Amino acid sequence: MIPPDEKINLFLRINPNIDPDTHKYLTTGVEHNKFGILIQRLPQVFKTLKTCSHIKIIGIHFHIGSQILDLENFKSLAKKVNFILGKFKKNKIEI
Image (tube, rainbow, N blue to C red):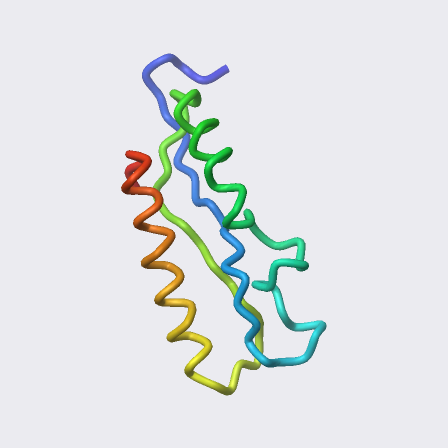
């Protein structure tokens, strides 16, 4: 049991739905992959987090795949991360 004044630090892995243009077995950040929370499910996650007094979100994590050769994929990811951080801020979820 967690003491009433203690919080568990937690990272959330979010699936940014970005295709890294690599081998299909190496992608992890496309919507049909099973890695991370889908962006469209974030409203449900925010609602749940607001009821979890023992959880402290200390970070978010993204992984779009391996052997990525085109830096534009990382640029797309950076833009998506900024968009998602805006959603956290709008919902008053502090990271």
